[in-house]
Amino acid sequence: MKAHNLTQRQFAEQLGISHHTVRGWIHYDRVPELSAAYAIAYAMGVSLEYLLGGKEKNITELRLKELELRKSAGRILKLMDKIQEELKRMRPLTEHWARKPKG
Image (tube, rainbow, N blue to C red; front, side, top):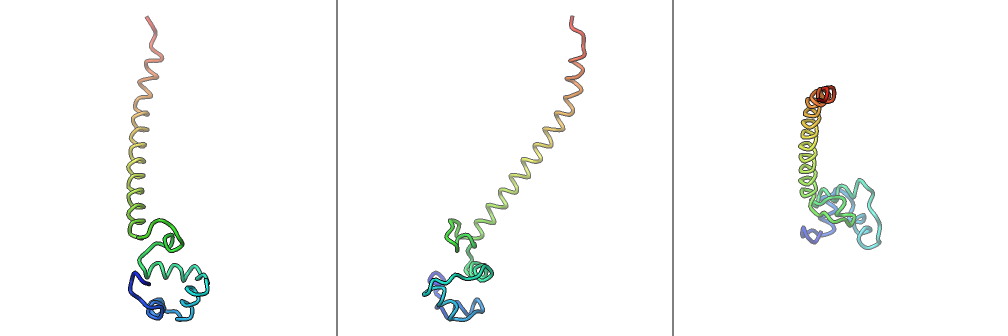
């Protein structure tokens, strides 16, 4: 709330919940339900992991990392397919040389 310059009341209004609920989270160590925690993270522009004490603050950073990993995985899978195709083409050659009489 401080990072967004919101009072407890403004924060509660933004989430569509009671001011007393927010007050309970802050002053009485109450834990929000998962759906409320998700709404808080979304409203604040952070990941749920960060809200729960994780390392990644910005949800955009997490999404970018995920996209980059997916792209890398796609490139690796394409490369593996090319390698398998090349090995299939090479197999007849190796079988030919294995059958060729020595001498």
